[in-house]
Amino acid sequence: MQNSSMEFCHMKNSYERNNRSNQMKALRCFPLCKSTGHSAVGFCGSSLKTILEVTISPKSPACQHYDTFWMQTVYIAELRCKDDAGLSAVRYVPKHEVMSNLRTKTEKFKPYIKGECVGVETIPGDGFTRKKISLEFNAEHNAWHYGWISHKYSNSKSHVIDVMVLVERAAIDDRFFIAASFLSPEFTIVSTKRGRATKRIKSDKKVVSKEVPAFAPFDDAPITKKGALSAMEPRPSNNEICEAALSNFQCISDIMDKCMV
Image (cartoon, rainbow, N blue to C red):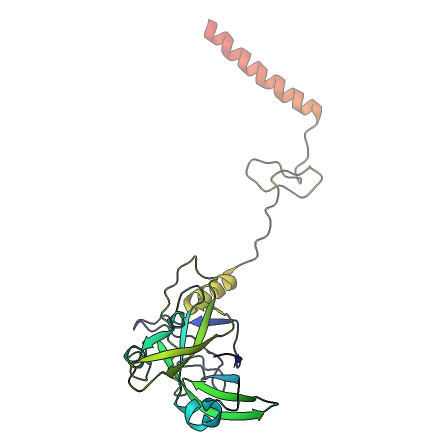
């Protein structure tokens, strides 16, 4: 599909993802919170809205019969890692492969999310016609399950939602032709468990004062370590030190004399 582009409304650059015991890994607040505001528990998110803009010739069947062509065209979206190949890597896909893998309220783990055409705007031009097709994905507000398996070295991986335009080639053909695909702005994901752990570590941090040095001059603050002199005790004079040394020497001499007798 030439001369086409897609606008993704209200995408953020990072999302949290739940890891539930029932294998549900749901993106939180994707692409935005509820219209009534953020919900701390349960589902919080909204439908994904995009605008497909196509410039075509007025003689094209897609232009002359837009009320049926654009409404009957199949639009699907796929969440995937940017580095991984998705469904859009092929040109033709069997119809049953697409239709049997569409996500519903009871089949929440299916990979493809069906979109609905909610409006077509025609903008006439000089020799061409520009059409704006408004699409809405997940209008039922099911959980945005994303089963991509992460590990500690993949936290910086970029992810996208890949929107594809599927066209039936002929009534007898059992395949869809992928006429175009559009990648959303990239975003990263973080586990809500890891997010809570990071917040807990930050809140548990305490300010630790530096240890007082073990040695200080006699004129400074007293030293409290065991065996050290306190600054409050008077310093012995040189004479007292000498007398104590002579006394110790005399004791040692007396002991040696007794041992030699």
